[in-house]
Image 1: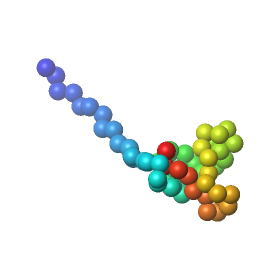
Image 2: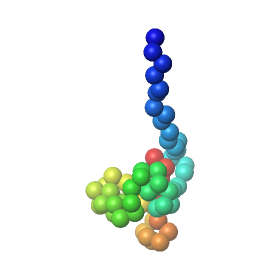
Image 3: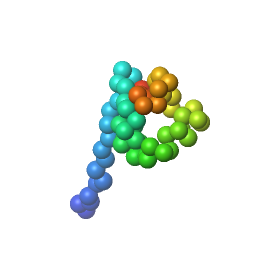
Image 4: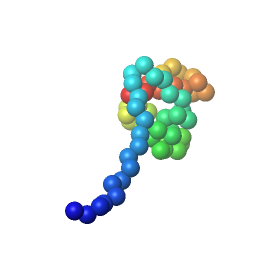
Length: 60
């Protein structure tokens, strides 16, 4: 039997009750903030509220 190193996986568990800031979404998805408007335009994610300076997103 060979000893093989298995890759270490990491992630964050999110639930429906959590609201994330723009920065938190970017870190969780590993995307620059400039890409988020594209995802919103395509309907992939939906911001909570209309004020971009206080934009929040659901954890799911």
